[in-house]
Image 1 (cartoon, chains in turn cyan, brown):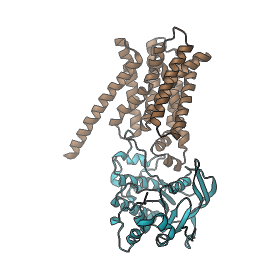
Image 2 (image 1 turned 90 degrees about the vertical axis):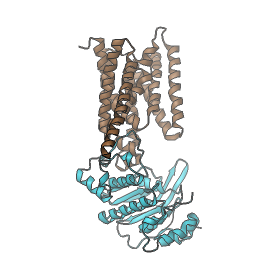
Image 3 (image 1 turned 180 degrees about the horizontal axis):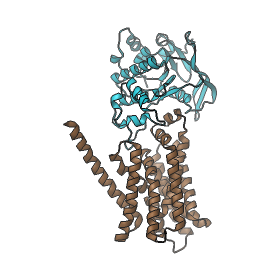
Image 4 (image 1 turned 30 degrees about the vertical axis):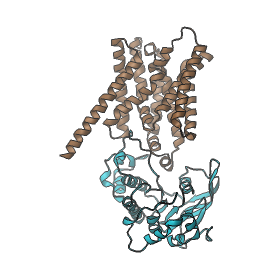
Length: 257
Length: 271
């Protein structure tokens, strides 16, 4: 059932911001990633999809140094600025935290940078609000604002729209696209929301412990591996990609457990 | 100076309050209350260790608390039923410590002073150790404040920002062990967690930032420490429990005040 194309080098991938070669990661006794090779070009939006337990988050976490690989290399452009959006925050209600204070953690970002980042993500009205009082969608956009503070060249997002409704998901992807347009940053994200992802990404990577198939949304969606691993939702995903279909009305599709 | 036992008691309580309040904020934010209990209860094991080896009590308590905190941290990384595991550790440590002290101790050993503190018997040497310990804890928290806050919200966010959340978590563990060691004589092992949690919880409804919470918690802790000692002196009640009762009174008052303030703000917003 493995697809023929294991690694597709995109012709326009001129300058890579990150190059992963033959990466293997073990967590405990389980081998989560094996022989993963992947590169992300400057300004490119790459989305990693895959079943639960396919190693998507582990791949992203190995890029920020939270997971130590036992083989392979991760090469980055010298002096690469990375913005990271975690899956969620462990925000206890006993921790008082305004949006502005959060954006100044762990380093003071300066008033102008904070205001700019909030405007970019459409959250400027939230500056003085408590993080705990925000809706899920608002909180994720604040996390995005924080990741944009240092004008990153690479934005890493770990299932940023998990738990958001279709409206919130669409708004979040619009904010990512706007950030890419303004900053020219590359985006590498893990996602469950197949419908929107496919239309908002330059390249899709289907992961199942290793890179099974990658390419344009059309290439991936028509692959045997995609049908085998993702299966039933494929026709709907293809339908969502029809021209003029706004992400706003796209249902947040979920991978089968 | 420091000749008067009551003055010494006040200065010791002040030192403990200064360190316990900001550390207590992290205990609350990171839901480490049970973790604090386990570490504090290990203090009794430390007393047993001191009796067995003729060590001075404070370093022995520090060693025992640190060993327990490290064991609990290692456990936190693996076990899912953290609550149960910590409960087992906390109460076993207390029971084992009491049994060991009984087996090793002299007939006249006053267990109550270890369980509930004996602040009126604080010596000048104790004062020095309390203030050195408090200074160390405050310096550590001040130095790592932003990194600790970030790691509390998301360890991965802290890693992406270039800090090591595991090392910072160990720093908190170390700070907790130090507070246990210096607070043992002031409030005793059973009430140390109360001294950590109550001022922080009292400050919570009245503040909007973590720094404000730490500062207000410090104010409350100082108030509880000095006010509680006054009460103990006036009514001839045990000092440690009197301090904790004062802190509990502050908590109830602050919570009521917070609720009232929110109502007023909401009514103002509705107009």
